[in-house]
Image (cartoon, rainbow, N blue to C red):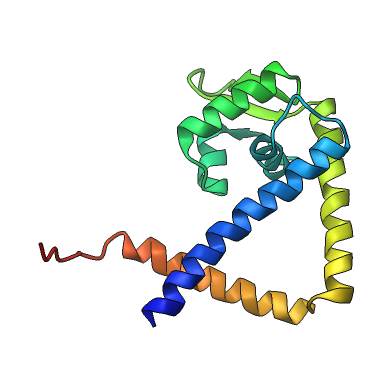
Length: 154
């Protein structure tokens, strides 16, 4: 079981890196140079919402300091609009600008085209449902694993 478990961990890591390379390739094809692939994915995940950096971190499972840096860069490059909350002046909310909405639409179209190609050549919706169910179970396991005591045997 440990071999399969470790293979799954490595595969998940590789798939995430490969996904980011796909996004990077599309940004390069579109000659978009003022946002990187990680920033584009964060922007995509914001979508139509208006979020704080903390909410974005919780929803996307990004590291907080990286999100703060990436949000700042996207604000500087006019992909995001940043405003202080009217209810809590300590809180800053972000939403997509017009430029950010255009990039979101570009990524949305790319994902739709990939899903269509995937469905005709690679897999079925049921296969993806099964894979997603397994990944959700792994996610729940890892959340619970944060509370597992590990016995050191040094």
